[in-house]
Length: 295
Image 1 (cartoon, rainbow, N blue to C red):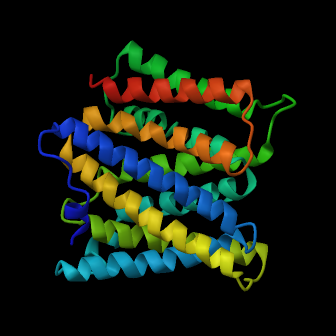
Image 2 (tube, one colour; image 1 turned 180 degrees about the vertical axis):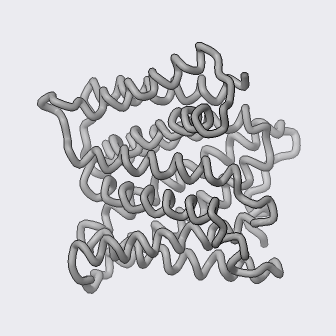
Image 3 (cartoon, one colour; image 1 turned 90 degrees about the vertical axis):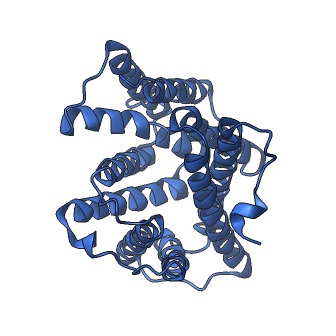
């Protein structure tokens, strides 16, 4: 039974309802993936976690590409645009992996939700897109939400949270570069490229932090969980974007923060303070407004 057939929903549901459901499943999968990475990093270096995860991801997406009769590596991966995308991917993967290991899961996930605002700002700067005053205010509100979580200069400031900001900027750069990627590149080929950059980021982290360690049996379980739920999230995300209208489905991306808060509170024992919760709410609201504003 194929993955798509296994997740087939009743036909009487609208395309938007089915797309929203797939997006919710996707974000739940990614939240569990983040939790698994964070737990695995308690036993082995975070670079080893990223490298192991990346190698298995390359294998999975490489096999998927071959099963569809495609080349594993598209010739365009060495073009200027794709090299820029790869650099941004390495930056995003490297710094976000550090953020997951060193900061509360809920905070790292909340800061990551500022990606749409940064992408919108980049589109204005690099693609000369015209924007309304409402979109400008939405973008500024998103950055205000990030500042409420970071609290620079205040007692609750965590220097390690800067890693989440740098990771978010890297992912935003990747998304902007993806807009210029050749349409001939399939999702599987982009997946191979993305996991290759994750592997490279893991190698860099491992070289800086020191040698690898032998994972405990439970750590192997977390690594397996990260891979399974990460791939599950990716497949559900693809289904979501191909089922409902993007404008209707995309706002449900922010459910990832809700899932991260639930996992952080009930499994990791995290207790987000009021400013962090307010900042998270502002980031989500600003992102939804940015996505809704098509002008």
